[in-house]
Length: 124
Image (tube, rainbow, N blue to C red; front, side, top):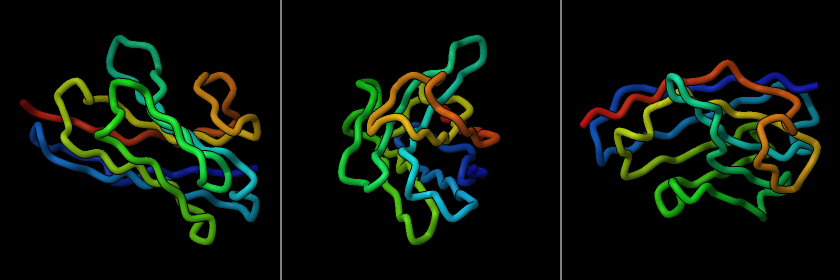
């Protein structure tokens, strides 16, 4: 089992950057493939990015490709989402999630563990 805690959200102007962190508890973090999702008010939870357990494979939604970067450090039990060139439409609650399925999983229901979420607000 793994527990996930996100941090790093906040308010930023369009064009700015934020880096979200997701700290995992437990000694088996490296066993999990990780993903980031987001959910805006009134919308379904949306896949953002995923990374394999080793970090050598990653995948992005078209809407964030070229602007966001997912990375991880298994020694630190942490996965990050670097978000650049932010747009107002990126405003959402961002969740990190862990799964043993993979290595790249884009469906939210295939993830086993979730963090509590971090609010990201991009003003125009």
